[in-house]
Length: 104
Image (cartoon, rainbow, N blue to C red; front, side, top):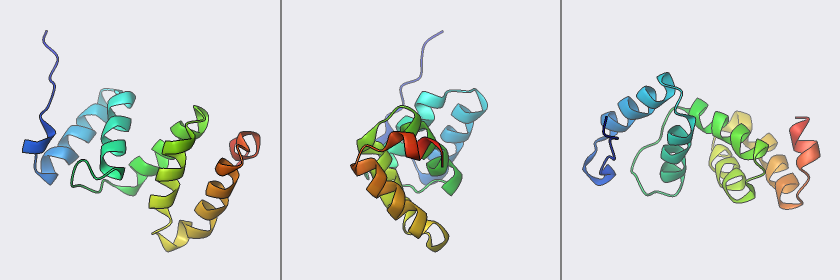
């Protein structure tokens, strides 16, 4: 079986939503994270459901991926109900306080 390697520049928003849902349903967490990172870096023009970003934040925290953790937390600050928490998370990540972040 050949692996599909999508040319993301030819996709529409609904294509990305279908693709991320497909990856999620098949347990392809690394591919979901790849799409979320591309979205955060504006490499693809889509904003996924907030839960994909929240799940990615946990994955980035668990792997101590400081750059992507902070990038995701900064994105999530645009949601008023998360803004204060994300600002704290960003501060802790910048200080490499992963033990504290893991308890939150």
